[in-house]
Image 1 (spheres, rainbow, N blue to C red):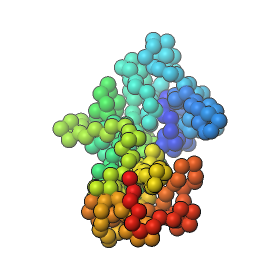
Image 2 (cartoon, one colour; image 1 turned 90 degrees about the vertical axis):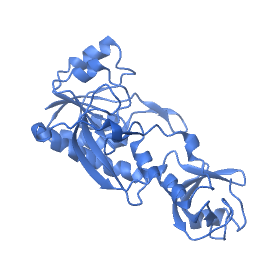
Image 3 (cartoon, rainbow, N blue to C red; image 1 turned 60 degrees about the vertical axis):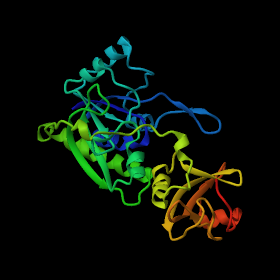
Length: 301
């Protein structure tokens, strides 16, 4: 097929590569414009743009697709289909209608559960036992279109970062399978009554509330790792908690129970496995404690 590919983050790169390798003609790649990054705030192209340039595919980075000129340029590509994966811009109806066979999206959840911007984070934080990807036909509503194909993936004790990588690969394979024989994947209407919204993560959600159960806190930590990261304050210093385990223990919520950094929660306790101090690289608990001893009896905010 002649495809327009639309995506921006690392999650979308495997799909672009897989579609190219499967022999489809990638007419053009649409991605978000370069953004300032790093300490020097140098403009950096998106991961998808980097891969498109490696593949020798033309790249466009419009700020919006709402103006008639951008829509006309999109339609002029004469695509059979558009494939969308975490692109980051709303697609107006004129864009959705331009490809002969419409637009297909790789959505990182088992729809209709977790429609919206942060489906992987929300699945982990909610304690879902499985997540996955859904290949869906796009329409004007937010992730409301008919579903063509779903692939489930167990969550186990994976972080959001680990699931991003896994689901990127799963989504790529699923999209290649669908485009190999569209007739084999008849659209199924979503059950709107079962839909759950996955709003964008607010950084304020990362503040750990030690009065919550250990299981809730441990899921928050995995759900926000590696970004934006769950965090607490240790004697006025903000520390990110990137991985933790649930352990036996009880005490006042937020109190450190021993010199091995066991922390009491509202019910049960957790022990950090991986932490990050401001301006420092992430480190294991043993390394963290060598540089910043935390004595039993310390109270975390």
